[in-house]
Length: 209
Image (cartoon, rainbow, N blue to C red):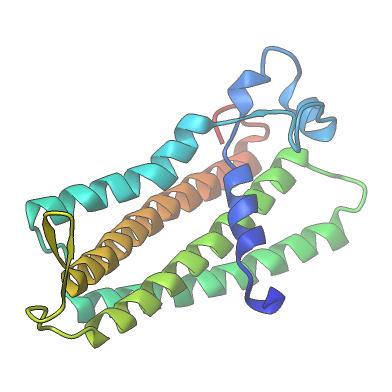
């Protein structure tokens, strides 16, 4: 099971949400990245960012289900997710190639901020691909559920619960949540690629990465 475990990807993705602002008053950004003294990058975890990118999607998903809205067509979503996953896989290989070229050509001239961003983007892309694959799996499994739920009920205390309805709603909840999370992490990737490119053109960049 270790070959298909996504535990490390999820753990490292959460660790990318660090608050560099917490350290700027203490050290120069480059020195800070070269000599971390508090965690992997010398920064505290950005709890607000973690809540935004991991908690908010499922809050919005619950609101969508409660309101009865249908956000997208299943076939359209499957096609879109497949295209994005393919693009992200290509981007992952491209990023690996860029990293190898930097290592071969700049053995003495290191750039801590660039290395920092490349690693964060690599982790973000890996996590987004994982989320996309999980979403596709849930979408493919969801239609397999029986459409009729009239004969599958259970009574708990005074409640009459429709089991299959609960299962279908649970699938919708996780699908909507993962799709929203996927989109948010795409924005994270775009932002970090933007800063990486800007760093190459302008040199050192201070800011929330």
